[in-house]
Image 1 (cartoon, rainbow, N blue to C red):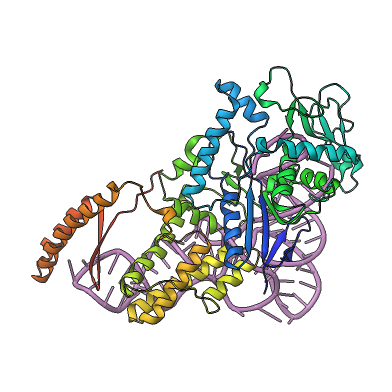
Image 2 (image 1 turned 120 degrees about the horizontal axis):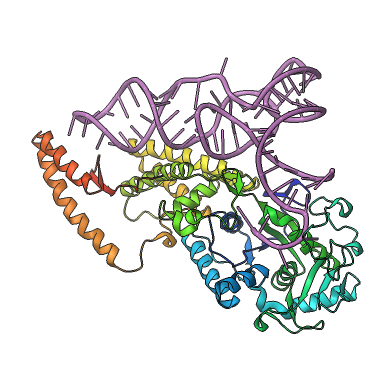
Length: 481
RNA sequence: GGUGGGUUGGCCGAGAGGCGAGGCAACGGACUGCAAAUCCGUGUACACGGGUUCAAAUCCCGUACCCACCUCCA
């Protein structure tokens, strides 16, 4: 079976046919950098990183554009509240977001354009829309420019709505709009708004509306027609509807496929940006490792709602450690010169590929990995080294596609050598104690042997006896509620 | 009012007409000095009520509850 995706626009699973064979252009709506990212925010980053990785693994040449919105009403309002320049807030939050993505091994996109860097492209596009009769400058002197929804008959096609059935926004300020559903392409500078947040335009100084940036930047970096447009489910309307309407109206074919990820909710409710700190990425990472958080997200299908809970997160982390544990033991059993080859058409990778091809079926893909782990554990126990090498290589490869290879440098701890030196020191001490314990065991003095193990354990280190001798590891953090 | 999605075992979470995805937890067994790890085994799950069918968690009709979006939310 070939690669296929659920396309929000057509509401069905469609075979993926790229515009240009062997290439894929993806535009992902990134975040508005107005606050610290919580786990819900980064889901789309993780989900579309998996998409991007799978396309690359399937030999596509991928161009991946993920924007950041660095100027909008909320940024202006929040920065004013905090008494600092809007650009300082946006800059800082952008850094936070980058750190969160990096921690979770979300690969850097081909380019990460920011709205404020593309004002001329937007102005150009707005002018073209006016020229084509699909936009107009308000005649109330506000300097606003609106998209004329009534002039575009297929408006509403992406989200399956009819203009007449739409509820006019109760809170929307109609200002110079001809129809309450018209949306802003350009917003004239209002009194009290900082001069730094206003750019020159044919309609006076102002700033761009939200939707136009994505149309302009996608067009610039991916072309007027491109393959995949992604984002969170809530963006379907109005953001993506508007993007599509204005792009089509400007004569751009725009996206061939629309992919939307579902929510991470808490107690059944959407994670609101005003929620407490406990779900901010850095705080969650105090409880589980980044790779475990990523595994938790990847284990669910991108189109499924995830009800976030720390219990489920801990459970996922425990499950992932089972995979890691196998990798550790398998690596130790394989010859030192063993390297991970590109295992291809054979199982388990083939089953994994089938799952991934089916609209990124990561849950089924993870199940394939677990099956392989069980198989590998058997091979390990029976000393089938060649088979074990195959299984081990396949698992590493599959995990890498999901961005979950524990050996990935992205997950390496600490940059300073301190941690490594500390680890070496502990290793020497524990080894000494384990030697004493081994002597006691050889003497069948189990009371003494267990006493030594208990002492090591009290220091937070677990000891396991394996056929190749005792092995120690730092005990996993215990979850606390 | 309009549009869309959901309800699966103790828990998480797939599947989409016939064969019990997978994980976590639990229980039994093997292995072990004891553990740990690992392997083997153990479950008659699909919100409710009807219907279609040889066969329904899956299709149809209805009901209940939950959620999202309806103009600047991932």
